[in-house]
Length: 144
Image (cartoon, rainbow, N blue to C red):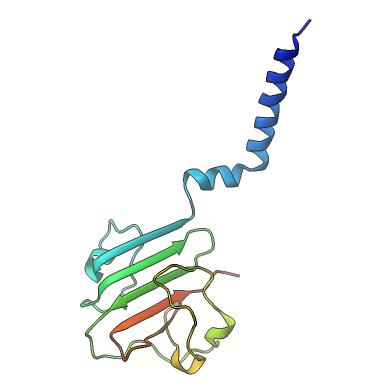
């Protein structure tokens, strides 16, 4: 005959096992979260092969203080960088940025996005510069 203590321990063990199975993704995300952040002093550091989040090739080589955040599960990304490069980056977007807002946020990210006419596109990125080209903000929307 089992003691009450043994039955309680067995029930707790079974409940823990069910919780792990039901919340497997949550448990896995606690161990290896899908959200990653990186700060690079230069664009070259972020373009190096060992970078935790790769800086896109279109970011000017003179870019500094490159901040990035990425969600590996959804593909969403944020980026901020400063540059003295006089060349404009990006081209008009075919889909307005207001239809594809960033799904990530961070303390260094802007509170509000500019109007669509101030946002340009480069590859899969939306980007804008609120201060005449010195600092750029860019994002990749989450995959649908």
